[in-house]
Amino acid sequence: MPTAALCPACKFENAAATRFCIRCGMSMADDAAEAADLTPNPRPELMRAETAALLRRVAHESGYACVDTKAGIRVTIPIGVERKQRVHVTFSGQDDEGHDMISFITVCGEYDAKHNQRLLHLNDRMMFGAFAIKTIKGKEYFVVCANQLAETADIAEIRKILFGVARSADRIEDRLSGGKDIF
Image 1 (cartoon, rainbow, N blue to C red):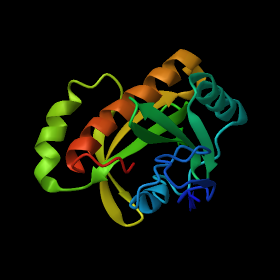
Image 2: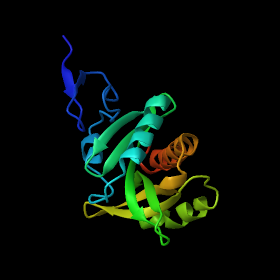
Image 3: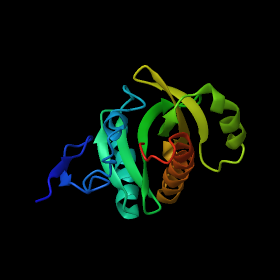
């Protein structure tokens, strides 16, 4: 009789052979528990209800797993058949002109200075977002981040941003981790 495995993120009981939680989309790999706890913005300003509803609608219509977190919303994007990437979406306050901003951020891997130049060169070819370094829970990580004005956000644009930042981050994560699907 197969044993069950608890998801490191949502604690849902999955079948033992499950690679990704069927409830929240989190990887069931051993190092996924640490990744589940990486919330990029621990004290975001409150996301407006209409913005959160739009994000949930995009996730639902796209077939993406969507989970509320302390920092906003975490959307799990499938990248091909075998990989997934979690994108954290938060309300990041306002730009210099007072317009509400939505932030999209996804972790690529642990920071290592030897990759700085390569990632900076890749920034000029990215359609959505840019590579950056972010300190999360006292540790530095390579991330892909993007911002969107909340007032101009629509379903098509959010879908493009979610998939674009997820795909870019997953490609680098694959290289940095030696093929592991952690984030």
